Image 1: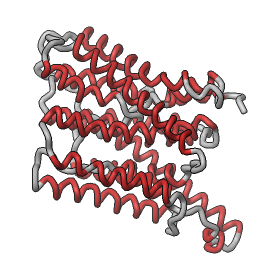
Image 2 (image 1 turned 135 degrees about the vertical axis):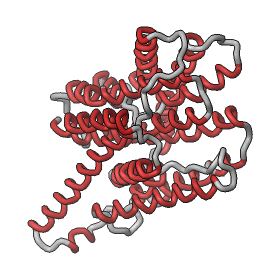
Image 3 (image 1 turned 30 degrees about the horizontal axis):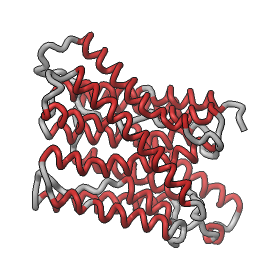
Image 4 (image 1 turned 120 degrees about the horizontal axis):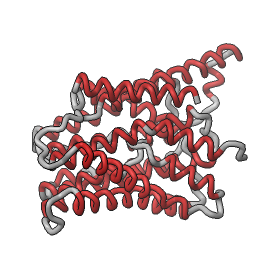
Length: 380
């Protein structure tokens, strides 16, 4: 639990400095954040295990993850349209609300899995189930952004090009699960993270030269996870470490590196949060703004509660509730959607309410993990 508290404090520190430095969206910050996120997702993939003899089980997991991503988006979009715009009959209001409302959908895989592991829940049924759901959750978010971007700016061929590598990566992960013979110590994982980030950014900026409005952007989440899932769990590691003391030092160095990078990631996510300055918003008092933020936050988290009705044969009510609450934390993907929304000229009042709601969820991440820990206390 000490790590959870430290991670929460680092997250808060990053948010505070984001408002002072106002560097959200800068190239260097984005690259460093993506490298750290890639590292975390490679580790997640490395620990990922599925039973290929039961593919229908994962189809059901995907359906559950889809609802966990869709319901918060639908609820928040409806709230934006009916309570924060001047007319619910305006197509423009629906268009902007539908795009911006997507920020409420994705669970932060990096933050969530780092904190659950830090809380000592890495071997629990809840962690293993959430690990699958959040990956599917992020895939849904990335895929759904394609039709939403079409609604915002029209049909562009670049948007459909993204689908091909996503499907190919998913096939690689399934076909070559833990079969790739590559080093897996922390310096190598960091090198892989750097390579994935560089390739992702290179594709983005090179395609921006073709059309600066619609560059091809392949998020690092899925490629990093797929690479980690392909890395082989091999006995060669024992051959590289001659003595028990050296082996312990080796594992300690990997754990220290993982903890340090996860801590840095918390700060970087906070730094990536856009400015909270309220500018040129007419007719919106602080009281109304707070009320909007509270309702948006509640609706987005209520939307994550559908898994409580699922997995009744696998887990108790407390475990299913723990899964739902584990899905509450938001982070890098949601913040990224907010940044993209700003480029489309979406209403300032909607943007500010969304940013503040994301901030509240970020600050409450530690509390969510503590609640999950209490729910699972003394449970086998």
